[in-house]
Length: 125
Image (cartoon, rainbow, N blue to C red; front, side, top):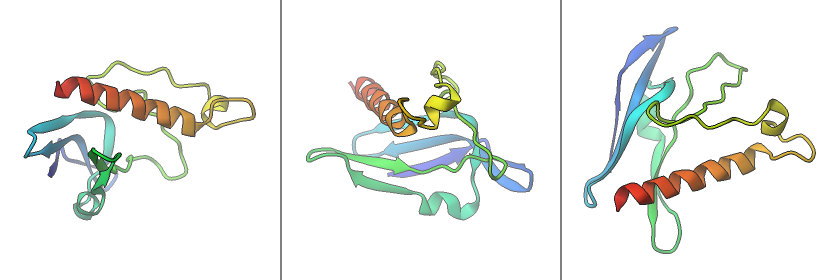
């Protein structure tokens, strides 16, 4: 597995990047693109923030954790991961924060993962 970053720049004294590429060489599977927003890309960020995990009994996935480059104590909701993707409608603030009777962030997160897995399966075919 190879994970690399592109579009590096310094913002507010922090090394950032715009693009990410994850490649699984044995299967020649590649997921790459420019993200909607910059993310932190300090030298040690990438080394310690990706891993290969079991997805289910027959599949493994690469999990890459990228930290948003935002002002501390603020929330930034991304309408899409990759800039080339169509935007997803983000629920109203009450819904996104999980107020009573509303769809919480965990449900939104699970739905986004389901859509990502479906897209990945379709791109591998």
